[in-house]
Figure 1 (cartoon, rainbow, N blue to C red):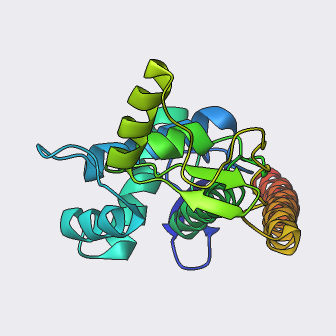
Figure 2: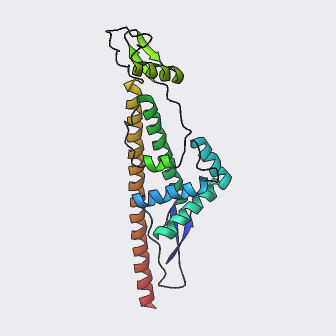
Figure 3: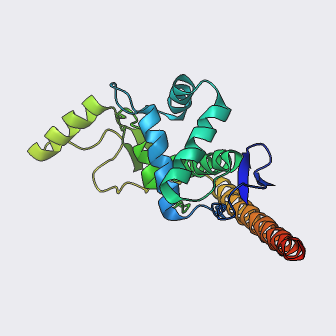
Length: 239
């Protein structure tokens, strides 16, 4: 028995082979950590140029299009590279979905971090995905809480105030002697964070459901192969 690749439907087409010893590669039932990191590294090699890594996801996607103008060819090459490395059969469409899941997870963690100032959503491949992108250094403008509200310090004003404080001669413009600054207010509503967490949970549930469907399909395929082999053995014995 042998098999050919059906890229659109992510399934095997079983055909009879001349050699009775020929066999199928085992089908990949779901990406493990090593395979996921290998896929990320495959994308890294495509998008990293002499100018360095892309600065954001938009530039990353643009570089992918430049490297491979045809998306089907991109994911077919990725599937074949994974197949050669791990000796398993990878469906190109499923490889594309896995990459989309990685991008969605990274975007949600990034958005949550910007809104809350901390990483509140767990994503186990965040560091590896973040290394694909080199964002330009941002100028951080400090926000100071006072009794009269929030005071935004410009960098040059902040430097002057620090120098004055070291000399023991100045207070902040809106803080009077004896007054203590109030803590800053939360930057983002909790509702947005809950929505992001629910979306990540839905993505994980969808990925698990997809893996279960593929495992069921693989079990059915193996059962059909065994039935076919039994039938062929019986026919050969009767000849």
